[in-house]
Image 1 (tube, rainbow, N blue to C red):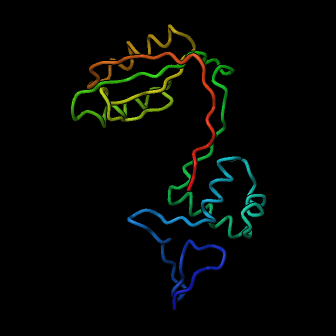
Image 2 (tube, rainbow, N blue to C red; image 1 turned 135 degrees about the vertical axis):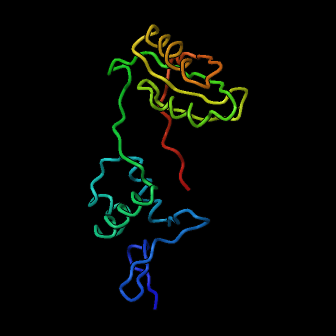
Image 3 (cartoon, one colour; image 1 turned 180 degrees about the vertical axis):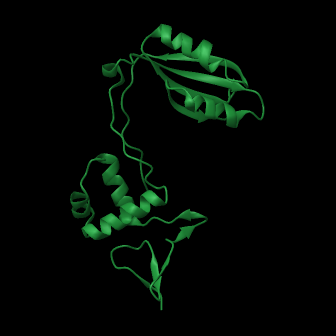
Length: 176
């Protein structure tokens, strides 16, 4: 007979055999407790497992098991420090739109992601094909990045750069 674990609905047991977490349309199914865990970690990624368990009202063992599954299934992809770019010497930021030759988007996107000054790459449906957020020490380094590095990528046909004058941090993304 199949039974669900009381605190950790990540797997079923059948005759002491592990069965993978439930999936919906090929994706891992997350429940309200999983979402509560993710919400808490988005607010404070340094939260201890003990504090996390208390906040979402589950045992520490249940919190450890759920965290392990959420990481293993790719729901939680990592933890990172948020850094003020100006205070680490990256005072210039820009968005760069990139137009590319047809059928080169995979290699262009990979090449863009490999550039150390690139913070984010988004493939878009617009008059250009990608928008890239970059950071540099100053305008000279930004110029070199765009004119020498990005435009030298095979498949890139054009770029356009918008300087970012001021940024404000957005709140964490809304979760269901």
